[in-house]
Length: 293
Image (tube, rainbow, N blue to C red):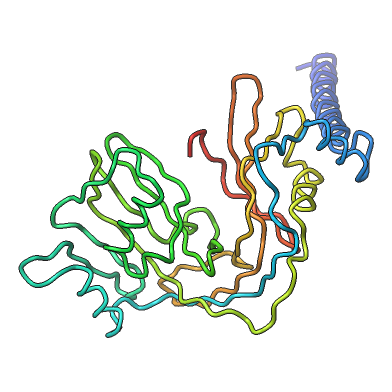
């Protein structure tokens, strides 16, 4: 290869590199402009009042709710007291409603109904609560979170509660501590972990208001105006401070108050739903969810 050809190749490579870097500089500048087009709280207030960030589908909760800190440890399903409760739920010998087993650590329960239990096609909250109270250990300590479908099987995911506040253990795969599997409109099995929760002695007013939580999402570019963000759910909850370890480790989890916020984004025909936890410390995201979850 002669020097002329080599020189041409070098020039071409640098030209392509310039295009690549130039594009990324433009992209970063565009994102910056989108986030801080006119800057400050005034711009955020304008976006709210104009509906560019749509909050019309929710009623913002009170900003003066009393909260605390929580400490949780997984319950051992093989302990005498829990074992007795499970035996009572499962029914007498010869008439067992379900059979159950635990993992090696004793903190993960797997239940299989001896006969599938019928549930309504579109179960109401009362229908679900009735099922949980009848067949699940501490079943009245759970709230419905979401469901997913695979063929004829639908799995309903539930989150444990404390004083009616949902308690989330993140990351995503650890959020739901009760998962009920149904097939053709009948409950066939479920798996469960149960966290024994203890509150701290001190109480305080939630330090972040709902609107401040939404503003944090906007400031960190989780609410791109070009995707018509709409707040569809916001409520107070508790989340673990660090990534949840395996429950099999029987590790203690510390929970802090946070706002759970669900956002719908629309970019043309592409619609997605995202979920966030906003606390005084930071913003945490659950992995993207498909529409309808």
